[in-house]
Length: 284
Ligand code: SAM
Image (cartoon, rainbow, N blue to C red):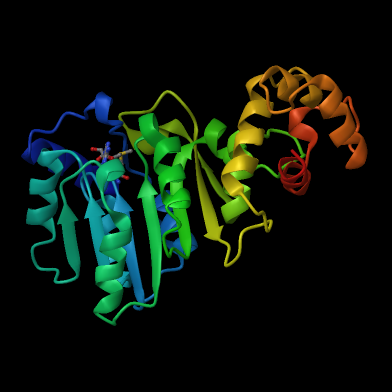
């Protein structure tokens, strides 16, 4: 049987494909990694899978065998032609030639749900790294009816996304991800698993979307605004950051709020729990 490496090389040769760096094209050639992604995404015949950036179709092939339906969203026209040829015999594939950031996912999901065949919606992707964060934030913030998001991304970004608030490696985005999802660290993937090799190490992570957000906050936009401003000056204390960024009207107001909430005046932005940010935002 042809290995994924041979298959990839053959397709690239046949269609005269040169990986487009600007589109983050690093094609997966490691069979074990493909299997791990498929296994950890736990797809069943009741699932709609949305694959972002299917490229040459390496993951797609496995997804089509396991899911009720696979919707592929791919920006590169050259890949569309390959996918159409390669999967012409499959009846459960739909291919959308668009920038994923401009796709109305809510509507797509609703349309599929109305057909009555799918129970869960799962995202699976080896993402284009140049837009990892906007894609993940779109998937979370649009509050789509997703069960999980299994993605390969840069290791550095992955570690930040799945960190636990108030522990090491946190950034403002850690709190956003935590609010919407619990996360799993699936697998670290060496550069040699792709052609061409990316410059960074990769990681597969899985975000399991919470049925209810991690905290029950009156105004989530306000809470995230506080978190964003806190992390604008990560090296300063929370008190100074929030006072400098006008979240606290004055340093004195900040001192009073922190005292009321029994939070130390010297605490740093990354040391707070999401619950504490919620309380600050509700006391402004
Ligand atoms: N899934 C394939 C694999 O694992 O070998 C390809 C993954 S490659 C890292 C990322 C893919 O995302 C490429 O096929 C690229 O053309 C596509 N892509 C890049 N920007 C995109 C965008 N804005 N919307 C949809 N797809 C995009």
